[in-house]
Image (tube, rainbow, N blue to C red; front, side, top):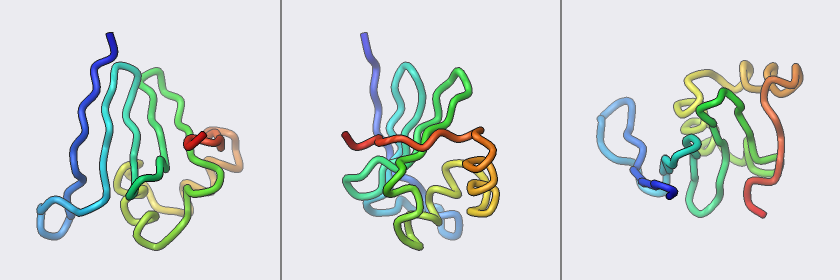
Length: 92
């Protein structure tokens, strides 16, 4: 059985929930969703996937993706280049 929960991300500054930014948790991992688009997925086994078209879509997406991955955009780019992060279509 697949167990799924959805929670709003919180602002680092105020601690208040942020509209349209979500973390979806299931039996396999966590996914960051911005509006209706899946941006990044962290699986418990250690693999991290980023949507090839939307991972760096906007300043707001980047801000909350960075918060989800606990790193900055330059670190994310390095991990994509090294193959540590896998670019794929999370929205198919």
